[in-house]
Image (cartoon, rainbow, N blue to C red; front, side, top):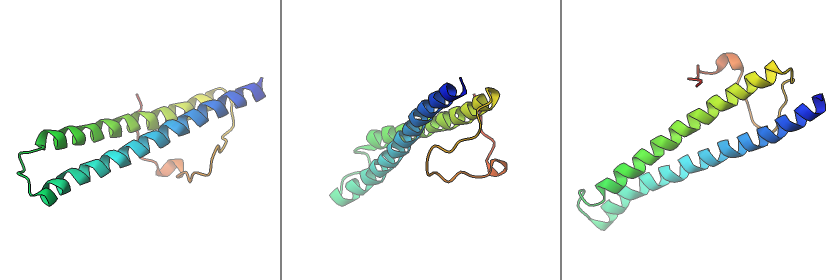
Length: 110
């Protein structure tokens, strides 16, 4: 039973890490877009009025993805708690550098 739980935990961890990676990539790509929009306006010598709604929408999209990332980070913390509750030992599933839990900021776990 323990081996089965560890296999399930590994599958869940792989999906969690994939979601975290996807969100980080989305944050980076939207940030690149946000940087490109005003530079394109300047390069094209276009009025600041043109494209303002696009800049606002893109900036809002970035904030939504960052908020979503925060929810996934909270889910990660909740999954760690759940694994402790069912007696799974801490396991490293990747090459990630993890901070000491005492150094972590307090997350708004929902």
